[in-house]
Length: 334
Ligand code: TRP
Image 1 (tube, helix red, strand yellow):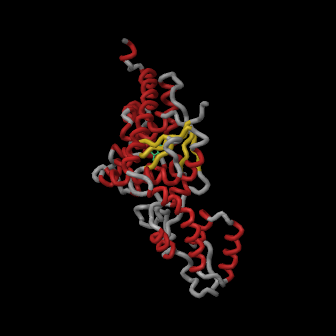
Image 2 (tube, rainbow, N blue to C red):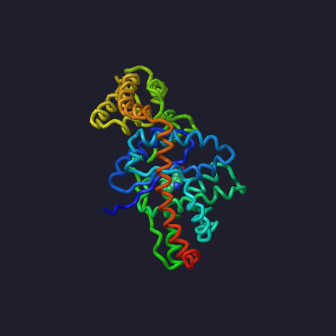
Image 3 (tube, protein in one colour):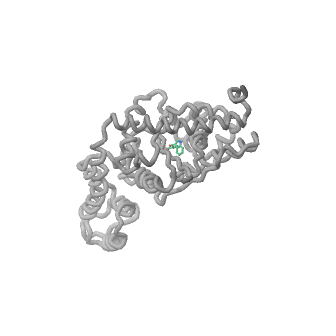
């Protein structure tokens, strides 16, 4: 049976959190039965930020793989692999770089944002600057058609498709395939402080690997409504992180609506609300935590070794087609 190929990935720069879970991980668990799914740990892309601090990546790599497997990405169904182990990828990048202009990269909204955030000014490292080209190599090497990602990745997929069209036109081939983003319903989750997107660097996220105790502490520290002091006070639902998380993770939508109404009117305390969220999240995280506890380092290493071997074969096939199309496959001319 020929199934469409889906490719996703994450940079290993820390453990994955509830934002990843609701944003892409849950989606991937479902999609793995629908598509031939590749899940890439993007350690090379992470190096564009952490080149001087690679231990961060080493420490996170197996944690991310453990996160994948504990949420239900099944290594017997999906191919979990590591970017740095696929040598065809950087070679593809070399060929694709000829097809992309610097102004196109500069104008890419995702790249533009990051240049600002990182404060690069006019000292942009070439490695960082080219990571969207590298991402195009990731996607095209597997002829992936479906890319389940968050909104922030859309401009990168657009750039990938520009490379695909340009390559196919330039070398008169159809060996590369265009890809389509598949957005999940919730693509960002606010942090427990209510200020920004949940993220490891802002230390405002609940991690899938957090202990039950830590989860509870984080819920108890969640931003609610600073003016809601007495239980009888009317409270605000908007911007109230506990409600945001209930909306994201609790399936009883009618009950949430009732609680919201009661909270607005006055008569519902934060503690009762936080207890409910704690029950909901603990119930969801327990099987994930239990699964994680069974995973051994050796098994994780074996999974990425097997996955990377399989992924390397596919990427090499595409690389040969690309070399053929350009006309530099001298081996095959013998
Ligand atoms: N850019 C993605 C992130 O930061 C990771 C990634 C690398 C990726 N290569 C990819 C995602 C290819 C989808 C497809 O999370």
